[in-house]
Length: 193
Image (cartoon, rainbow, N blue to C red):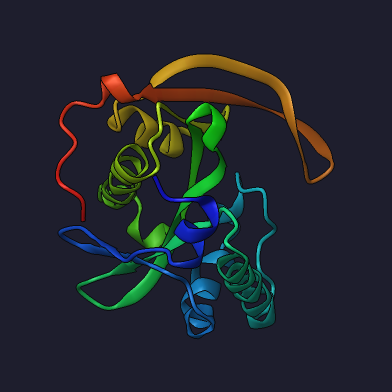
């Protein structure tokens, strides 16, 4: 099993039919700003809508710092047909001692409802069970975030309930839905990417 530092310092490139999951870089700033400046995209995120390109650059600088330090973070999602950076998918936390992690994701509204996030998240899920020795993978979403919840359902995750007022976001407490999947519930884990 990889250590947290090894994994996130040397985050491997993963590929699906339509996507490349790779380390984010500062040159992704314009593509990031294109979707992170959309209030509809950031409506349910923990981070604020980007107001300037500089906001996107700061975000990417922070992600690159996380890679250097070997801290839990995300892959950037590149859409193969046009080479654009269109979103993020990865880990919110990882507790190796409990073989448990949580995934999170965000996607440009231009690419919603095309199965893209399910494709990316399925790859991250498989990576977690294969390379990180996970037994349990969790995901959470705001109560009204139907799109995110649909991704969790497509991944075969089980709804466990509502965690009341778990997060304090933009000045108010938010309740979230919790989903999970266990190693023995993953149908067939395809060979590593």
